[in-house]
Image (tube, rainbow, N blue to C red; front, side, top):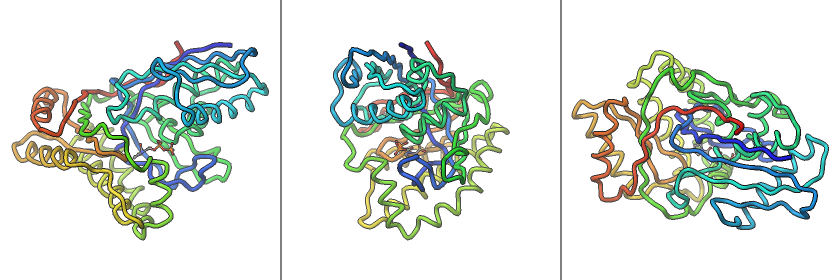
Length: 324
Ligand code: 2P0
Protein backbone atom coordinates (compact mmCIF):
# COMPACT_ATOMS: atom_id res chain seq x y z
CA UNK A 1 0.00 0.00 0.00
CA UNK A 2 2.62 2.47 -1.12
CA UNK A 3 2.85 4.82 -4.10
CA UNK A 4 4.92 7.82 -5.20
CA UNK A 5 3.98 10.73 -7.44
CA UNK A 6 5.53 13.89 -8.83
CA UNK A 7 3.53 17.08 -9.45
CA UNK A 8 4.56 20.50 -10.65
CA UNK A 9 3.51 23.83 -9.24
CA UNK A 10 1.50 26.30 -11.30
CA UNK A 11 1.29 30.05 -11.77
CA UNK A 12 -2.17 31.54 -12.16
CA UNK A 13 -2.61 34.03 -15.00
CA UNK A 14 -6.25 34.49 -14.06
CA UNK A 15 -6.27 34.19 -10.28
CA UNK A 16 -8.43 32.14 -7.97
CA UNK A 17 -9.38 34.47 -5.11
CA UNK A 18 -12.28 33.64 -2.83
CA UNK A 19 -14.31 30.58 -1.85
CA UNK A 20 -18.04 29.98 -1.86
CA UNK A 21 -17.56 26.81 0.23
CA UNK A 22 -14.58 26.55 2.59
CA UNK A 23 -15.06 22.86 3.39
CA UNK A 24 -15.41 21.59 -0.15
CA UNK A 25 -12.94 24.25 -1.38
CA UNK A 26 -15.26 25.65 -4.02
CA UNK A 27 -14.22 28.94 -5.60
CA UNK A 28 -16.30 31.99 -6.41
CA UNK A 29 -14.41 32.38 -9.69
CA UNK A 30 -12.85 30.27 -12.42
CA UNK A 31 -9.08 30.56 -12.89
CA UNK A 32 -6.39 29.78 -15.46
CA UNK A 33 -2.77 28.80 -14.97
CA UNK A 34 0.39 27.50 -16.48
CA UNK A 35 2.03 24.47 -14.88
CA UNK A 36 5.71 25.14 -14.12
CA UNK A 37 8.44 22.70 -15.15
CA UNK A 38 11.04 24.13 -12.71
CA UNK A 39 9.06 23.75 -9.48
CA UNK A 40 7.81 20.37 -8.35
CA UNK A 41 7.10 18.14 -5.37
CA UNK A 42 7.77 14.41 -5.09
CA UNK A 43 5.67 12.55 -2.55
CA UNK A 44 5.52 8.97 -1.28
CA UNK A 45 2.55 7.69 0.70
CA UNK A 46 2.79 4.40 2.59
CA UNK A 47 -0.29 3.16 4.47
CA UNK A 48 0.86 1.03 7.37
CA UNK A 49 -1.48 -0.77 9.79
CA UNK A 50 1.21 -0.57 12.49
CA UNK A 51 0.95 3.26 12.69
CA UNK A 52 -1.36 4.86 15.26
CA UNK A 53 -1.22 8.31 13.60
CA UNK A 54 -0.20 9.87 10.29
CA UNK A 55 3.42 10.95 9.90
CA UNK A 56 4.62 13.74 7.60
CA UNK A 57 8.26 14.12 6.61
CA UNK A 58 8.69 17.36 4.67
CA UNK A 59 12.03 18.11 3.00
CA UNK A 60 13.81 15.57 5.21
CA UNK A 61 12.34 16.66 8.56
CA UNK A 62 9.31 15.85 10.61
CA UNK A 63 6.80 18.58 9.72
CA UNK A 64 5.21 20.89 12.25
CA UNK A 65 1.84 19.93 13.69
CA UNK A 66 -0.19 22.38 11.59
CA UNK A 67 1.11 20.92 8.32
CA UNK A 68 0.72 17.34 9.58
CA UNK A 69 -2.91 17.96 10.52
CA UNK A 70 -3.66 19.48 7.11
CA UNK A 71 -2.26 16.36 5.43
CA UNK A 72 -4.01 14.08 7.90
CA UNK A 73 -7.39 15.72 7.20
CA UNK A 74 -6.75 15.26 3.49
CA UNK A 75 -5.88 11.58 4.04
CA UNK A 76 -9.20 11.21 5.89
CA UNK A 77 -10.96 12.08 2.62
CA UNK A 78 -8.93 9.44 0.76
CA UNK A 79 -9.57 6.87 3.51
CA UNK A 80 -13.29 7.56 3.34
CA UNK A 81 -13.30 7.17 -0.44
CA UNK A 82 -11.39 3.87 -0.16
CA UNK A 83 -13.41 2.59 2.81
CA UNK A 84 -10.37 1.98 5.00
CA UNK A 85 -8.92 3.35 8.20
CA UNK A 86 -5.16 2.87 8.13
CA UNK A 87 -2.65 5.62 8.93
CA UNK A 88 0.12 6.59 6.58
CA UNK A 89 3.66 7.85 6.45
CA UNK A 90 3.94 10.68 3.91
CA UNK A 91 7.37 11.72 2.69
CA UNK A 92 7.46 14.85 0.56
CA UNK A 93 10.29 16.77 -1.06
CA UNK A 94 10.14 20.09 -2.91
CA UNK A 95 12.53 20.86 -5.77
CA UNK A 96 12.77 24.44 -4.57
CA UNK A 97 14.23 25.81 -1.34
CA UNK A 98 11.74 26.21 1.50
CA UNK A 99 11.74 29.71 2.88
CA UNK A 100 12.28 31.21 -0.58
CA UNK A 101 8.71 32.47 -0.39
CA UNK A 102 7.50 29.99 -2.97
CA UNK A 103 4.23 28.29 -2.20
CA UNK A 104 4.20 24.50 -2.41
CA UNK A 105 0.54 23.76 -1.72
CA UNK A 106 -0.40 23.33 -5.41
CA UNK A 107 2.34 20.83 -6.26
CA UNK A 108 2.18 19.33 -2.77
CA UNK A 109 -1.50 18.45 -2.75
CA UNK A 110 -1.52 17.38 -6.42
CA UNK A 111 1.32 14.91 -5.71
CA UNK A 112 -0.35 13.81 -2.46
CA UNK A 113 -3.73 13.25 -4.15
CA UNK A 114 -2.13 11.10 -6.82
CA UNK A 115 0.14 9.06 -4.49
CA UNK A 116 -2.39 8.64 -1.67
CA UNK A 117 -5.28 7.58 -3.93
CA UNK A 118 -3.06 5.04 -5.70
CA UNK A 119 -1.65 3.69 -2.43
CA UNK A 120 -5.23 3.33 -1.11
CA UNK A 121 -6.16 1.23 -4.13
CA UNK A 122 -8.34 3.85 -5.83
CA UNK A 123 -8.18 4.22 -9.61
CA UNK A 124 -9.04 7.88 -10.26
CA UNK A 125 -9.18 9.56 -13.66
CA UNK A 126 -7.92 13.13 -14.23
CA UNK A 127 -11.24 14.74 -13.31
CA UNK A 128 -11.61 12.76 -10.07
CA UNK A 129 -7.96 13.40 -9.19
CA UNK A 130 -8.42 17.13 -9.82
CA UNK A 131 -11.48 17.23 -7.54
CA UNK A 132 -9.59 15.33 -4.86
CA UNK A 133 -6.52 17.62 -5.07
CA UNK A 134 -8.88 20.62 -4.79
CA UNK A 135 -9.93 19.43 -1.33
CA UNK A 136 -6.32 19.83 -0.14
CA UNK A 137 -5.71 23.23 -1.72
CA UNK A 138 -7.76 24.93 -4.43
CA UNK A 139 -4.88 25.70 -6.77
CA UNK A 140 -3.69 22.05 -6.57
CA UNK A 141 -6.60 20.97 -8.77
CA UNK A 142 -4.87 22.76 -11.70
CA UNK A 143 -1.54 20.97 -11.15
CA UNK A 144 -3.04 17.63 -12.17
CA UNK A 145 -2.56 18.74 -15.79
CA UNK A 146 0.45 20.06 -17.65
CA UNK A 147 0.67 23.15 -19.84
CA UNK A 148 -2.18 25.67 -19.76
CA UNK A 149 -5.05 24.73 -17.48
CA UNK A 150 -8.47 26.12 -16.58
CA UNK A 151 -10.24 25.47 -13.28
CA UNK A 152 -13.94 25.79 -13.96
CA UNK A 153 -15.56 27.06 -10.80
CA UNK A 154 -18.75 25.02 -11.22
CA UNK A 155 -22.10 25.91 -9.75
CA UNK A 156 -23.19 22.74 -7.94
CA UNK A 157 -23.32 22.69 -4.15
CA UNK A 158 -21.53 19.32 -3.93
CA UNK A 159 -18.56 20.49 -6.03
CA UNK A 160 -18.96 17.75 -8.63
CA UNK A 161 -18.53 20.28 -11.46
CA UNK A 162 -15.57 22.16 -9.96
CA UNK A 163 -12.35 20.75 -11.44
CA UNK A 164 -9.53 21.60 -13.81
CA UNK A 165 -9.37 20.93 -17.54
CA UNK A 166 -6.35 21.12 -19.83
CA UNK A 167 -6.51 23.96 -22.37
CA UNK A 168 -3.20 23.43 -24.22
CA UNK A 169 -0.29 21.03 -23.62
CA UNK A 170 3.13 22.34 -22.51
CA UNK A 171 4.65 21.94 -25.98
CA UNK A 172 1.97 24.21 -27.49
CA UNK A 173 3.87 27.33 -26.43
CA UNK A 174 7.31 27.36 -24.76
CA UNK A 175 6.64 30.61 -22.93
CA UNK A 176 9.13 31.55 -20.20
CA UNK A 177 8.20 32.51 -16.66
CA UNK A 178 10.86 34.06 -14.48
CA UNK A 179 10.05 33.87 -10.82
CA UNK A 180 11.81 36.64 -8.96
CA UNK A 181 11.91 36.13 -5.21
CA UNK A 182 12.14 39.37 -3.26
CA UNK A 183 11.38 38.29 0.29
CA UNK A 184 11.96 35.19 2.38
CA UNK A 185 9.77 36.45 5.20
CA UNK A 186 6.83 34.27 6.12
CA UNK A 187 3.73 36.18 5.03
CA UNK A 188 1.56 37.39 7.90
CA UNK A 189 -1.73 36.43 6.27
CA UNK A 190 -2.05 33.08 4.49
CA UNK A 191 -3.78 32.96 1.10
CA UNK A 192 -6.62 31.03 2.69
CA UNK A 193 -7.14 33.64 5.38
CA UNK A 194 -6.59 36.54 2.97
CA UNK A 195 -9.18 35.39 0.48
CA UNK A 196 -11.75 34.78 3.23
CA UNK A 197 -11.19 38.30 4.64
CA UNK A 198 -11.54 39.75 1.15
CA UNK A 199 -14.80 37.94 0.37
CA UNK A 200 -16.23 39.02 3.73
CA UNK A 201 -15.22 42.68 3.73
CA UNK A 202 -14.12 44.11 0.37
CA UNK A 203 -16.74 46.32 -1.31
CA UNK A 204 -14.83 45.63 -4.56
CA UNK A 205 -15.23 41.86 -4.37
CA UNK A 206 -18.30 41.64 -6.59
CA UNK A 207 -16.65 43.92 -9.14
CA UNK A 208 -13.69 41.53 -9.18
CA UNK A 209 -16.01 38.62 -9.93
CA UNK A 210 -17.62 40.59 -12.75
CA UNK A 211 -14.27 40.90 -14.57
CA UNK A 212 -13.37 37.20 -14.61
CA UNK A 213 -15.25 35.73 -17.55
CA UNK A 214 -13.98 38.33 -20.03
CA UNK A 215 -10.39 38.06 -18.77
CA UNK A 216 -10.55 34.29 -18.88
CA UNK A 217 -11.85 34.22 -22.45
CA UNK A 218 -9.15 36.66 -23.57
CA UNK A 219 -6.40 34.74 -21.80
CA UNK A 220 -7.43 31.41 -23.31
CA UNK A 221 -7.66 32.91 -26.81
CA UNK A 222 -4.24 34.53 -26.34
CA UNK A 223 -2.75 31.14 -25.43
CA UNK A 224 -4.35 29.51 -28.47
CA UNK A 225 -2.88 32.30 -30.66
CA UNK A 226 0.47 32.34 -28.81
CA UNK A 227 -0.08 36.06 -28.38
CA UNK A 228 2.19 37.24 -25.55
CA UNK A 229 1.10 40.88 -25.62
CA UNK A 230 -2.57 40.04 -25.11
CA UNK A 231 -1.88 37.34 -22.51
CA UNK A 232 0.55 39.60 -20.65
CA UNK A 233 -1.82 42.55 -20.51
CA UNK A 234 -4.71 40.40 -19.28
CA UNK A 235 -2.51 38.69 -16.67
CA UNK A 236 -1.21 42.04 -15.34
CA UNK A 237 -4.60 43.63 -15.01
CA UNK A 238 -6.10 40.49 -13.46
CA UNK A 239 -3.32 40.29 -10.85
CA UNK A 240 -3.61 44.00 -10.00
CA UNK A 241 -7.38 43.74 -9.67
CA UNK A 242 -6.97 40.80 -7.28
CA UNK A 243 -4.55 42.85 -5.17
CA UNK A 244 -7.02 45.77 -5.32
CA UNK A 245 -9.58 43.58 -3.54
CA UNK A 246 -7.08 43.10 -0.69
CA UNK A 247 -6.30 46.82 -0.50
CA UNK A 248 -10.02 47.44 -0.20
CA UNK A 249 -10.66 44.80 2.49
CA UNK A 250 -11.39 45.88 6.06
CA UNK A 251 -8.86 45.91 7.59
CA UNK A 252 -6.90 46.25 4.33
CA UNK A 253 -3.75 44.26 3.67
CA UNK A 254 -0.95 44.24 1.11
CA UNK A 255 1.47 41.41 0.37
CA UNK A 256 3.91 43.55 -1.60
CA UNK A 257 7.42 44.45 -0.44
CA UNK A 258 9.82 47.03 -1.84
CA UNK A 259 11.19 44.46 -4.25
CA UNK A 260 7.72 43.81 -5.66
CA UNK A 261 7.53 47.40 -6.94
CA UNK A 262 11.15 47.29 -8.10
CA UNK A 263 10.37 44.30 -10.36
CA UNK A 264 7.15 45.91 -11.66
CA UNK A 265 9.14 49.05 -12.61
CA UNK A 266 11.85 46.95 -14.27
CA UNK A 267 9.22 45.13 -16.35
CA UNK A 268 7.77 48.50 -17.43
CA UNK A 269 11.20 49.73 -18.40
CA UNK A 270 11.94 46.53 -20.35
CA UNK A 271 8.75 47.11 -22.33
CA UNK A 272 9.71 50.73 -22.97
CA UNK A 273 12.99 49.47 -24.42
CA UNK A 274 11.11 47.16 -26.79
CA UNK A 275 11.40 43.86 -24.90
CA UNK A 276 8.00 42.22 -24.34
CA UNK A 277 7.73 41.30 -20.65
CA UNK A 278 4.73 41.21 -18.33
CA UNK A 279 4.30 40.54 -14.63
CA UNK A 280 1.92 38.67 -12.39
CA UNK A 281 1.89 38.56 -8.58
CA UNK A 282 0.31 35.88 -6.37
CA UNK A 283 -0.74 36.30 -2.75
CA UNK A 284 2.81 37.19 -1.76
CA UNK A 285 5.65 39.57 -2.51
CA UNK A 286 7.34 37.64 -5.32
CA UNK A 287 6.79 38.53 -8.96
CA UNK A 288 6.63 36.25 -12.00
CA UNK A 289 7.67 37.73 -15.32
CA UNK A 290 6.30 36.35 -18.58
CA UNK A 291 8.45 36.59 -21.70
CA UNK A 292 9.57 34.81 -24.85
CA UNK A 293 12.30 32.20 -24.17
CA UNK A 294 14.72 34.18 -26.39
CA UNK A 295 14.59 37.08 -23.90
CA UNK A 296 14.72 35.01 -20.70
CA UNK A 297 18.48 35.15 -20.06
CA UNK A 298 18.68 38.90 -20.67
CA UNK A 299 15.68 39.61 -18.42
CA UNK A 300 17.01 37.33 -15.68
CA UNK A 301 20.25 39.31 -15.66
CA UNK A 302 18.36 42.61 -15.41
CA UNK A 303 16.23 41.33 -12.53
CA UNK A 304 19.24 40.00 -10.64
CA UNK A 305 20.78 43.47 -10.80
CA UNK A 306 17.96 44.82 -8.63
CA UNK A 307 19.11 45.03 -5.02
CA UNK A 308 15.88 43.54 -3.63
CA UNK A 309 15.84 40.48 -5.90
CA UNK A 310 17.25 37.37 -4.21
CA UNK A 311 16.78 34.60 -6.79
CA UNK A 312 15.35 34.26 -10.28
CA UNK A 313 14.02 30.84 -11.24
CA UNK A 314 13.44 30.38 -14.96
CA UNK A 315 10.61 28.03 -15.84
CA UNK A 316 8.66 26.94 -18.86
CA UNK A 317 5.34 25.13 -19.10
CA UNK A 318 5.64 21.78 -17.34
CA UNK A 319 3.91 18.40 -17.30
CA UNK A 320 0.95 17.12 -15.30
CA UNK A 321 1.12 14.83 -12.31
CA UNK A 322 2.73 11.42 -12.78
CA UNK A 323 3.01 8.27 -10.72
CA UNK A 324 6.63 7.28 -10.16
C1 2P0 B 1 -4.08 31.14 -7.57
N1 2P0 B 1 -3.65 31.80 -5.20
O1 2P0 B 1 -4.98 31.12 -8.42
C2 2P0 B 1 -4.27 32.14 -6.44
C3 2P0 B 1 -3.73 33.48 -6.78
C4 2P0 B 1 -2.98 32.90 -4.61
C5 2P0 B 1 -3.24 34.05 -5.49
O2 2P0 B 1 -4.43 29.74 -5.19
O3 2P0 B 1 -7.14 27.90 0.59
O4 2P0 B 1 -3.11 27.98 -1.45
O5 2P0 B 1 -5.54 26.14 -0.16
O6 2P0 B 1 -7.43 26.84 -1.64
O7 2P0 B 1 -4.72 27.45 -3.34
C6 2P0 B 1 -3.33 30.38 -3.27
O8 2P0 B 1 -4.34 29.82 -2.54
O9 2P0 B 1 -5.56 28.41 -1.17
C7 2P0 B 1 -3.84 30.62 -4.61
P1 2P0 B 1 -6.48 27.25 -0.57
P2 2P0 B 1 -4.36 28.28 -2.16
O10 2P0 B 1 -3.04 30.47 -7.68
